[in-house]
Image 1 (tube, helix red, strand yellow):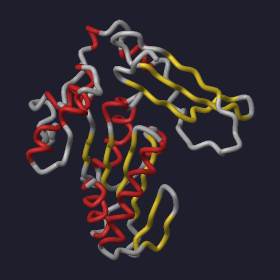
Image 2 (tube, one colour):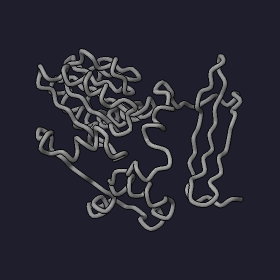
Image 3 (cartoon, one colour):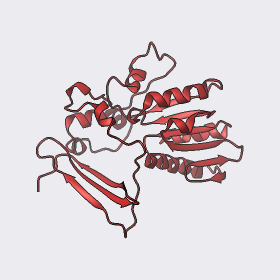
Image 4 (spheres, helix red, strand yellow):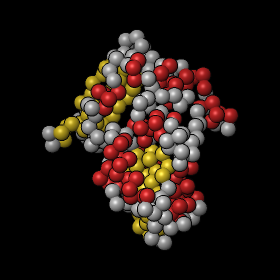
Length: 243
């Protein structure tokens, strides 16, 4: 992603950089992208750990799963990755804006769209209230026009219309058309939950939810560790045959 290169340039210029991600795994992916850019341009780190690197000039780059407690007091530039999917976006917003306002830090929000009537939808659509932001929208058709090698027809057949519109056409989901409201679904999600790769010797307990006609089928796998179930895998299959 070019965002990691942009953040790396900011750190070289002496500004701290913080990536907030929708999940722990996504945070680690962002750091891998950033390290690949650093390697390509010969940028060395004075310190390098899983979630943080420190450059020779003292500036650092961090990538963390979204948590309002992790960013209070941060000074530097903030990148919000997949902001529309944060469980508590307004709480995050109230935590970081005071931190960067005093130093005129840069705020960049990146996300695929999700629900209407959300903070991300408001930030994107209300240009009068949030006049301080520049807005960019890149859907799959523009990406193809810009040179992306993508099998449009095959990929479109793998998704239902709503998922395709949200994931590839940058359209927001209409909550009123859903059987279960998005706010109700979010209330059932534990923001401490993370994905990880279990050891080959661990027992995985799996359950499969069959989508008979229009719904997607889901295979979920968990392991039991110290009395707590942890998610090890989650495969969602669109238009899967019953067999």
